[in-house]
Amino acid sequence: MLDEILQQIQKGILSVAEAKKKLATFEDLGFAKVDHHRKKRQGFPEIVYGEGKTAEQIIAITRSLQAQQQNVMITRISKEKAELVKNSCPELMYHETSRILFWDAKPAEKKNCSGYIAVIAAGTSDLSVAEEAAVTAEVLGSNVHRIYDVGVAGIHRLLSHAEEIQNATVSVVVAGMEGALPSVVGGLVSHPVIAVPTSIGYGANFQGLSALLTMLNSCASGISVVNIDNGFGGGYNAALIHRLAQKGGEHFEDTIP
Image 1 (cartoon, helix red, strand yellow):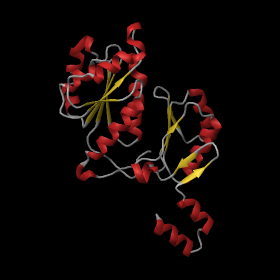
Image 2 (cartoon, rainbow, N blue to C red):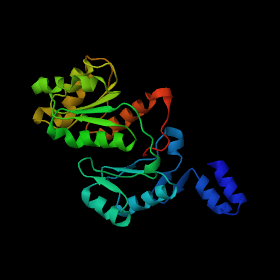
Image 3 (cartoon, one colour):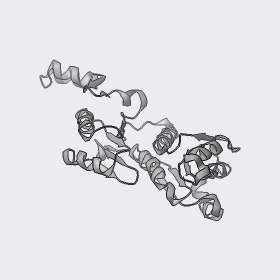
Image 4 (cartoon, rainbow, N blue to C red):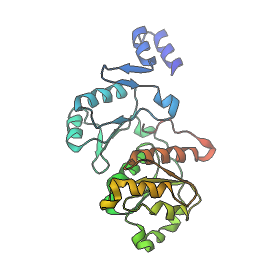
């Protein structure tokens, strides 16, 4: 990138002021400092948390990322706010169940990856969190197999997918109620399991606390736990593991953010 910018300056295509802007590590928008070097440090560009931001702020951040040919991913954004953003940035795509708005700067250059992440949900009520994990992983460049409504109340449903789950590179297991599903999956596989507790459940579920504590106290080895309803965190961690597991440790430079 540096060589390309210097060549453009030498040819008179790019001014010094424009070059400084391209080389800046972040852009100060006043209300936000957009980190343009996040991808260089962490492998994925900065991801925008949509809750608490206005549509106008999200539009400004989106345009800042797009100007640098950075991929865009906005999480926890309502349908109404997403529509306002899309009025100004119609190229963005919105996934309603996961509440994720995204844009791929270089879709034609996207590299294929081998293997897949299994996203496993205990019940249909957990789907919003499971889809947040699944779409996050897909937007970050991973293949995802969805295995839904396989909670422990009907364990035969899970066991019918045993081979598919065992062949995954990493599993993200989403469950509310008592949160037992990650322990069961952990006892069936030889790969990392990321447990995501949800706030789904009756009174004694304590808005997901009971599921969280069950997962933290799992007797199965190889289970890591993210916070309650944090599908994004589960999907992001799974994408990191999946990327590292690729043959030769290849990093995907052109995946979304």
